[in-house]
Amino acid sequence: MKFRNPSNGYTEKVSSVAWLWVLLFGTIYFIIKGVWTHALVSFIFALLTAGISWLIYPFFASSIMRRHYLKKGWIEVSI
Image 1 (cartoon, one colour):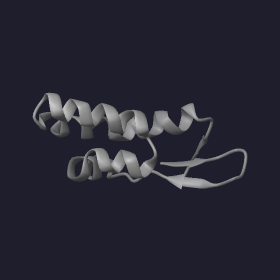
Image 2 (cartoon, rainbow, N blue to C red; image 1 turned 120 degrees about the vertical axis):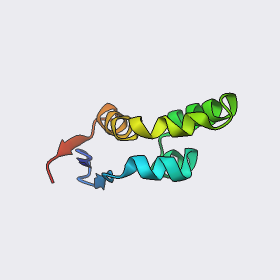
Image 3 (tube, rainbow, N blue to C red; image 1 turned 45 degrees about the vertical axis):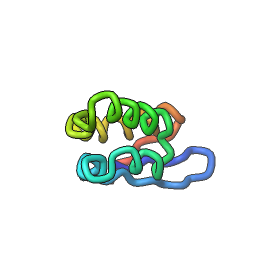
């Protein structure tokens, strides 16, 4: 997926294997991408479930990233 910022034309790509990065790095992936809400939520869920949530959270990584950019007003562009 690719998203373009309409104000300055900057394009950001979301990897098709975002789920893998979330599985391997968990909260750190969301911190690097600037998705602070899910960084905090995933960290809290990991603490409450003793890390088991990190096996479930990756299934939602692509939709989380897509929703994040669309909510900020970015436009999804075809690859």
